[in-house]
Structures are given as structure tokens and as C-alpha cells.
Length: 343
Image (spheres, rainbow, N blue to C red):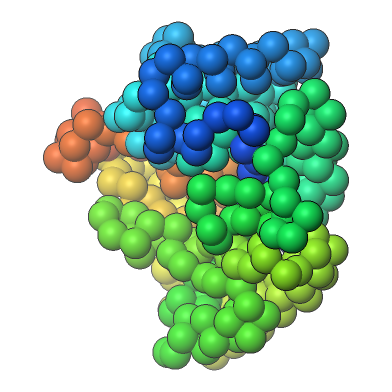
């Protein structure tokens, strides 16, 4: 299976990915929390019967083998803790060849259509909408002329649409008051920003999610327009902070840049936290390195970041930080960077 996030993306020095999620529910069935096992099985069978099997593969999550589960976790079809997924026999996932389009059943709402692209690419909305419209033509979707699409989560009622940009902000994160100022700016657009991970070993990754909030009383076009204006502001702000750090602290930044690359390229063991900190410095100073000694493409930098962020969850924090886990992670990073050296 191809990996959708290795493709070249616009503004991928800042924007790791753009996602559009559209949720729908089916008439005649209770919302997911109130479905008994018999009703849930009927729902899964009903939806499976209308999935275009020429475009999508997959099925009930309990039928996925370990290799498939790990792959779909990395490709962001399943949650980060897929290895500990609750009630896999009550969930189903369908996905296209590169997993850029997927249909989730039973994850929150009855249906979740998701389209993803590397970098800044709002065309994902049209791709998700096309799949949603096809499903709506085959299913009796819960809709109100007053409230729009009906959902168990009131925050999703109305359009049922959520746009999410995953952004790497190493410079703003290192600027005093930078994230606080950006949070205020995001709020002015009536969107929200939050860390990729609130706690744990990757809490200080410098990676954030910028997501739409309103679904009631606003059209899809308004959501998209606000999002595009906002993400342009974010990209501009992060690049400005990188300029300032690179120009005012050039020697220190160049030194940390080289040390960070050396750590990733030659370490025999590395934690997720250490790897993401190093990748943040590589991202911050990448366009200012004029030595010519470090060969590193943006695509490689993005792939490494995504791989580590979406590393399948280990059963416990201790096991994810074990020597074997750190050795395996370091070996994978070395192989990827060695490939860049030879290109």
C-alpha cells in the first residue's frame, strides 16, 4: 500500500497535512453509544453493502491482522492507540489504495468520511464530499431542515464537517509568548489550536492541530474560506519567526541544526521525544543551511515527522521507551536518512 503523506505537498515546511472529515448518521438506528450488538451488526452490514468495493478495501476492524493494523495506524486511518482499540468488532474501516480516502463506521458517529493530503491542500474537502454524497444517495441519512445533519455529538451537528491542519511550529514554539499569541489569533477566526499530544512523551513535539469549530449556522464554504485565511496567517507567522531566529542566532542555530542531524543520522537508540525535538530544529533551520554538507529533502523530513508522530501505540509508556523500541526507531531513521545521503 502506498503512503499518501510521502507525496510533495504545498507549504510542507509548515503544514504537514490537511484533512477533511464529514460525519453522517443513518435513520432507523440509535446513535452509536445506544446501539446494542445486534443493531450494530445490522448497521455494519447495511453500510458494507453500499461501499464501492472497486475503490475501497477493508472491513470490520476485528478482522485486521497485526500488519494491517500497524500500517493503517501509520496512515492515520485508525487512531494512534489502535493496538488498544475498544470493541473492534463494532467498527469497520474502508480505504482506497494510498489511504488518502477512508470511510470509518462506528467511530463516534455511524459514518466518518475522511480525505487527507500531504501539506496544504484544501481540495481534500471536495474529495470527501464526493464520497459522502455517494453514500447519501444510497442510505437514508438523518437530516433536519432546521438543524442540518443530525449527530450524537452536538458540536458536529449542522454541516457535519471538520477541517484539520496539522502544522509544525518549531519557531513559534521557541518564541516567548508565540503560542499564546497564535492561540488568540486562531480564536478570532472561531477555530481552535491544540498540541498534537497534550501529554506523554511527544507532548513537546512542536506540532499542533488547527481545527474548525462551528458546524451549526455556518456553511461549508464559510468554513473553508476562514480556514484558508487562517492557515495563510499561520504559515506567514511561523516563517517570520524562523527568519528571526536564524538571523539573530545564526551560529547557535547552525550548531544545533548540525547536532540534531548527527543525532538522527547516527544514534543507535532514540526516544520519540528526542527524535521530534531534533526534527523540529532541522525544520526550523533547513532553508538557512548554506553549508551544503547536510542532504535532506523536505519530503524526508515530513515523512520522518509523520512516522514518529503516528507510531503505533505501545501497550504501555514503559514498553514504548524500552531499549528495543528505541533501537528499532533509530535504525528506521538511519535507513531513511542514509537514502537521502545517497540521492
